[in-house]
Each structure stands twice: as C-alpha cells, then as structure tokens.
Length: 161
Image 1 (spheres, helix red, strand yellow):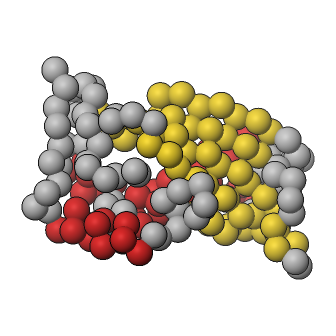
Image 2 (image 1 turned 60 degrees about the vertical axis):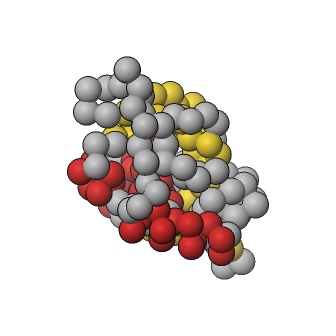
C-alpha cells in the first residue's frame, strides 16, 4: 500500500514554499548545488589517492545539504516516517583526486516521479581559477522515498519539483 505524505500545514512545507519562490540553488539543473571539500589523509588509500568509496560520502553530503535547502533534515524526515534510499547508482571514476586537493561537488536534482529524485553529481578539482572543467568523478543516484516498512511514499508536494 502506498502512503501519501501531506505537508500542507507543516512549518517545513511553508519554509520550502518560501524558498521555492526565491528559486534557491540546488533546486534545478540551472541552479546546481556546490559543496567544497578538501582531501585529507583519512580520505586516501596507500597510493595517496582518494579511496573510491569516499566519493560516495562527498555525494551523500551534497544530497543532505540540498535537502536542507528545502527546509528538511534527514532526522526530521525519518521522525515523520519518510526515509530516502538510494536504489540505483551509476559511477564513473575518470581521474584520481589526491591528498590535499581542493574539490567541488556540483549536484543537480530532478524529480522523476511522485516517489523518485535523480541526483547528478560531478566532482571537480579546484585550482586558482575555480573548478577544472573535466570532472574527476561522476555519479547519478536515483533516490526513492519509502516508509519504515519499505513501501513507497509520495514525495511532499512541490518537493524537488
């Protein structure tokens, strides 16, 4: 059975509608979310390059920040009975990032159904002029909203629209 999550009277929904009217970054392809990070020793493997799984952590942080732009936290969504799960991800490792590199995760999101959002992540190395044009890592993550029993839930009205 599919549930419906109504946000018509919640403070989060009001905050989202106010943000949507302002066209905040991260809400569309035209306004990507940008997250800057630095490569620390803990991020690297024995060769001094970013361990492959850590790129997924950078992407998760970006998705969490985007959710915050919509006036939600993962904890608040979980308390309301909505969980976000990655159910499909395409990854491409194009060039290595190295110890002390400055990186920028550029993320766009698009709602593809009442239950799903696709996040497109591009990780770029930063230099003195900004992000390099060619990404080091590319990931497309399809995320679904589910309840605690694992059943699909509709995303809140206007969420990632």
